[in-house]
Image 1 (cartoon, rainbow, N blue to C red):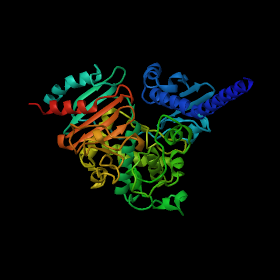
Image 2: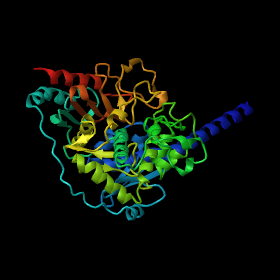
Image 3: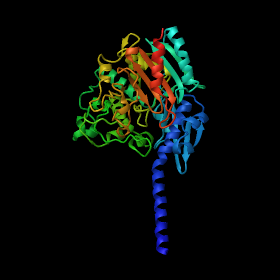
Image 4: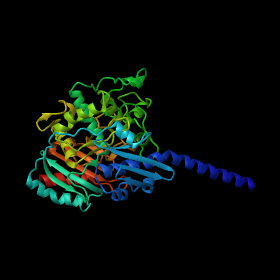
Length: 456
């Protein structure tokens, strides 16, 4: 009996020890997620902290964090059990999760950006008859939640003009909202612009020092953009996975992803990887002598031609924009971005992306079963029975009623920019729509937009 008690006690002790070790590994992720996302929502989006905690942060261990918003110093500190993380806002750069430094040191490294001076361009109004027909859908979607989820902003462009625009309470035309993985598509655009300017060759092996002398030296930008680099990666957001460690623990996110070993031959195996995008962004950033020169390049060659003025592409501690996840922009600016792809890489009469870039973007990666191009998702088939599943990091929207030429930007928790060339449509949805849970029925929403738009 005594022996059984000792064994039971030892088992309980080991279980407690194991649980403590597991929780300790999650602490920077739990508190880092809360601090970073709450700080960005408050200081970049201008949202109410209590509302963000009640909606965006109300899941898993994140809901149990204790969050302190310091409006004077523009920081958020989040605590859970013995863990603590702080995120700080820097003017012009957005919010960065602090790892191994202070807010003061971060701001000294990143002085305020020079004021963007170009004139923002207004989107033209579209056909008033189409607008009138879409009004009930916009109202049902945003106000009545008839398509599920919690929409923040909704915009539809038809033939380049706004035919529907609606916002949730507390959100407006000037509210910058989070892209999540739609940022990957912005990284696609930056790579395209730099290709046009002969600053990179997406089909050439990359000169990354850490890869010289091993098989990784053959990886190209195109391999990374098509999510076929062959690098080891775990995109599971529910654990201490590669993506969570990268976003919440690392100072240099691209550097962390670069360190991963090769699992398969580059260009042969599709696996969704946020790490791939941050490698691409780090590589693009390194073509410039300084952070400021890279940001000036983005301003003059990317944002200004589109008429975008309020975008914030947040950086990691190394000064590199987080290409996988952290663009904050208005619904109209996301729509302008989508319209550029609908217009084959042109904006406001100017060619921004090189000729053929959109065609390249929409060419399926060889192992993706037609669902993925280059940092854009594709709708080349009905994916109800698609074998590209969660085990490959992510899977496409099931859009059986949509045209095969539809392609789109897909962000975590319900962020979308749908580009539908055959219908001359761009549809922007910014929302909170977690999986599993109250997921927006995007297929029905898009089907209704196309049906109503086409009515006489």
